[in-house]
Image 1 (cartoon, rainbow, N blue to C red):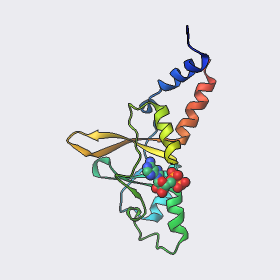
Image 2 (cartoon, helix red, strand yellow; image 1 turned 90 degrees about the vertical axis):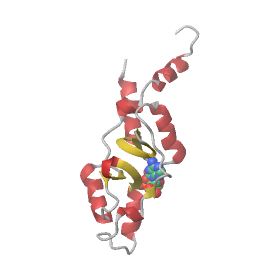
Image 3 (cartoon, helix red, strand yellow; image 1 turned 60 degrees about the vertical axis):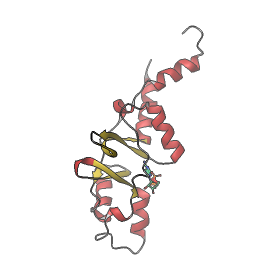
Image 4 (cartoon, helix red, strand yellow; image 1 turned 135 degrees about the vertical axis):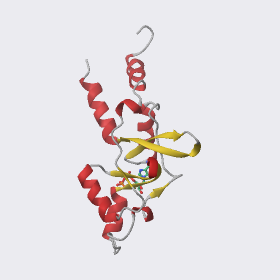
Length: 152
Ligand code: ADP
């Protein structure tokens, strides 16, 4: 540790964690899923954010709990309205990748004021398509924070 302040040592340690070792399982629905069924999924899967993908897990959008709350509170027929009409769409989705340092992904959560990022990988033959492979959320960061605190 010669020449390094304790702060630098901690920072260097934190920067070593990668998204891929911390990510959780993504909860994914199709664009045609009704608002009603999306809300049910939110409860059953115990998550706050759903990722919307098409065949092959190709990312199309994100639906948050407040997106759902807003539409359910209105007059809409939530059994017949698909999540596709309210989701935040590609290319406006903030994503991360398994190789990205976790602190950079955490910085994206803070900077863009969102609760979760889809963890994505490029699809071999298409630069514009991203496959959803995981979920990185504020809970992921809180869990890591606790884990670091517990280490001796
Ligand atoms: P909530 O709306 O439940 O507080 P968020 O703060 O995560 O949850 O979402 C705020 C808005 O940003 C919502 O409209 C949602 O669709 C959108 N959003 C959520 N996650 C992302 C993301 N990773 N990239 C882009 N937009 C997102």
